[in-house]
View 1 (cartoon, rainbow, N blue to C red):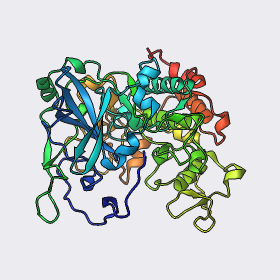
View 2 (cartoon, helix red, strand yellow):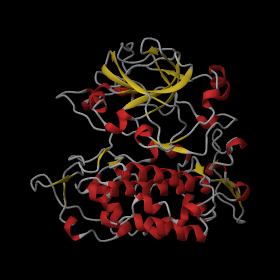
View 3 (tube, one colour):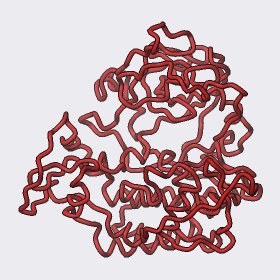
Length: 474
């Protein structure tokens, strides 16, 4: 999703107005300004009192998402409140969004919006989208050292996303934003919970006062406090299901009329043909699906590191894995922001990175959970200070779906994020089994090709044996 900006908008300001709230990760609080987020407080009601805010479910660059009680229907809903600057674009007549994915596609792989309405606030007009309540996004449950999916669940979730894409493409549309942020796990029993159950499971919402750098009080454009997003893994009870749904159809489009501008997919999920400026297509959805499959199984992204923030850098990384670019792409010019351009006065060629990163290595080096979360090599590693509860395992109720890498002990130390010895410690971890690695590499090698015309379709992918290794798809 992209938007327009005025000649002088809050996003152009270099100065920080607010102090960071003490709630951990949160939405960008500097965007509580005209054109930005709508200020929300616990207990607020919307749409003539119908929806009452109970907790925060999450946030993104374009919206905050809240757990709300539908007082009319006596049910739980997710209320997505879009930034004012992006509400006009998000409110356009998008057939997949307005008609609802589950109405257009008869399948359980989608979460269709229930309704939408507009509110007026101190920062402008905001689109509000009412959705079914879903659980955490896939990227949170499969995230490097923080959390990893069990292998069987990574295959099951990947299959369900592929099945959803097959349905979308069969109806003549592209999703346009296939990422692990738009793959959400279900909460099959959330409808049975009362408000007291929410607090019993996850505690009362944690808040942090929003303060200004100057010490002056915030105005009506900003909330008095920031709410910490609900942590589904903080409970001793697991309410997360074993199925996923594909959400967020705001960037979907008809295959027959692809957007003329580059789609707003996060750069690490962009297909190479889209990165060089060609139109998106079902094949670019498939490339993004491949990136999701790898993330779900490994906890990392195949074409991403800390330097990847634009299409030009993405193409350098893809070159490391796939090798020489197609002849017709080698003269692509890139502007100062790493975007493709045809203007020789604004662009230049970009030299590829020389280091190779073969796809086979990316797959065969996927590390997995050791038995009992313990690895014994007989070595003594430099001691590290233990901070907080980062090395405590998840509650046993989660052990069938996820595991926690930082709870793994290798000899005398726990596995942590990237430190001096991390790579050597990871070498001691068990790796993906040879039979599975062979199948996964075969699948991804078919998806990760430069020519979009030779990538498999979503329907063809569904028959790949990697998905069917253990019979846990249904």
